[in-house]
Length: 408
Image (tube, rainbow, N blue to C red; front, top):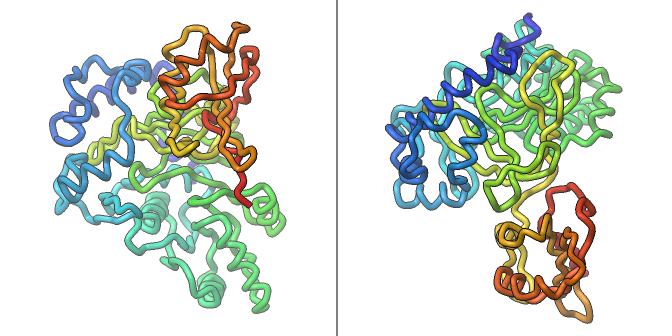
């Protein structure tokens, strides 16, 4: 089996940039021509003018809430697909509800790249414990296994004793599913006196893979790697055996922006993950995942050359209610953007004497906090206790609103 899924993974930086200029403009043109909902969202933009990530940052952010509203008025896909619903092999429903399309050929969700990087291929039997019911996770990994030549046992979830027996009887060599369900299967096998030593690899997603759990699998001789994907976008990024960050998939473009905005952050800073898909059937542009991550500098030691991110680092939607008023990340971003003296800001919500307290920490070289009071009230619609701190003092964790209240 080849170490790499295809030649795209090892492209030089100048070749990737050349390909990006072609593919990005082509995808914008495709969206405007064939996805009317997305065309309205993008507005009057010349596709040929969008050839770099910097150009892409000029376009509006698409949020899942907007997608859901569009689907209500124009079911099932809101005009955001380039094909009619009956032209897809599957239609899925995720919580919301949000409807997603799917195809059964050509590794449509691009997860095969992740399985290849995990060492899964011809000769393997994958026990696929992702759900095949309503949501696409089961089919995503089904297609991925086919793309690398592996056989699949479509196990789905539940019935753990049967899962154990099937894994033994079939000689399953790899697991696909949530990080913790493999442990449930292995623990049940121990109780039943069944040896599942044939399982050597695991590809997981849909939850956090804690270091202690990965180490427990390693102690059992199972190499466990995690992928980052969504039902809308397919594969976004994935680990390789190097286990140094997550490598961005070749079929998407990833931006890291200040939460609540579309403004890119500096490399290494934590922000919200925006993804542009190059899938011509479902051309989502600057789609906000609501997840936090950061760019990891350099290239993976495994030889793949695309950008890396640090993986999932929390949720970007930090909207909270303080003193009966919603405070949103985009309001904090607007405050910073409108005041040249403010480099960064963070809202902290606490409780004192059974009352909400809002504190605003501001990175600035200024020494008089009172100069910001009117802008804070006008933008956040609430008064705040203001604390001025030196530039670079606030944590690089992507938090714009830190709700520290406890109601125990």
